[in-house]
Image (cartoon, rainbow, N blue to C red):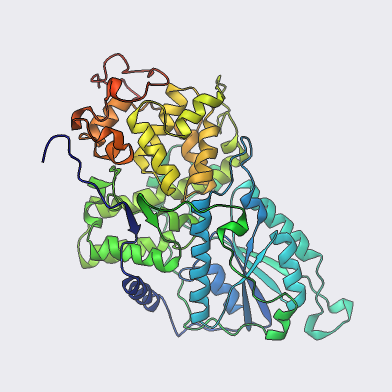
Length: 533
């Protein structure tokens, strides 16, 4: 093979890459391991399960508690129009087409899994604070169960739903006597982290500002809870006649009904939504391909589906729980081997926990220009500069390739995210919130705590003042894409160049939009000052 040839990966790699029958078999085995016929149901009446960012059956405490507290259970998902509006400051689509399609697949899968276990999924378009009180009133449901969230938009919806439920008065025991009337209640259940918030060795408001301190504290002082077992059947549903008053089960929309246009998956990775797909991916990565043992060595890759776990889109939608991943890691360690790589998957999940708890401690400051420390900086909002970054026309192949991957697939490697963030805020001097909101629009694995937590860190305005690093593009390119395979995949015009020139194409590529803050005079200079990578 000549020095200019690049082996082309598949044009679009499915994630998971299993056949449909293998995905179904992996999911069925997971459900069998995590089901128990010994669970008791002692509740009365009707309860509503309001699904939010927890689109799964396995290890869903809110779902199991709603089932146990009722005789009949109605699962509900509200397609909130606010999720399909625009971002707060810069007006990007709040949910891009790729993530919306992923959500649709998650709902379709959730509905199928519900129907296998004696339930169904009611899908309605509208605001939860309008829909849920009407459902509760129609069914005389005593409670609405849901997963607790942490950021301001989600907390506002919780307050509005609670207020709406307080305005619903239900007769107790079928009596119309007002003295016996009750208000339905909203029961919020913690379920989004690996370590439960009640098991931390400190309150969220006293969370350490340094990740390492947090990690060492929870690893030494906190106990991880087991996954919640699932009953074999979750039925019955409320009587059919009651549902007629709600207009039936509703339909899961297609993209066009949400005002979005399909982006065809023809390059990079194509993620499939849903709990079954998530369980299939864990089976594929851990057990079939046996790649967990090498995770720490490969996790900084950028090309292909298997350099890292790729669990994050399903974690963000709640199609899989971090506790389930923890249990699978421990099972792998018992049956195969335990090493630094198996631990490092848990290390990354603790980072995810940390950002979620930080969003409680610092509230809306994670969305503000100065971040949690209220850092004052002179940021630019130059539209043309930002658009060159957004569209992948900066003149720096490593930046441009990553940005094209993000727009095309809804995904970008962890390494890539750090590099493009550093370039936007350090080299271009652009308001970091513009980058954060573009990620919010595009990312399959968007969740507010992780996204804005990472961006505040990258912009040097996060809670830890030591997290103020500059990523040298030449050094990153030479270290993580030494033969230019990644940039040549996303920028085909570079394929004709020798491998060593693909990241440093000179006049063979578009003009660089800005000089680098460091390392610009000679692209071979990789001496890195303290605080730079």
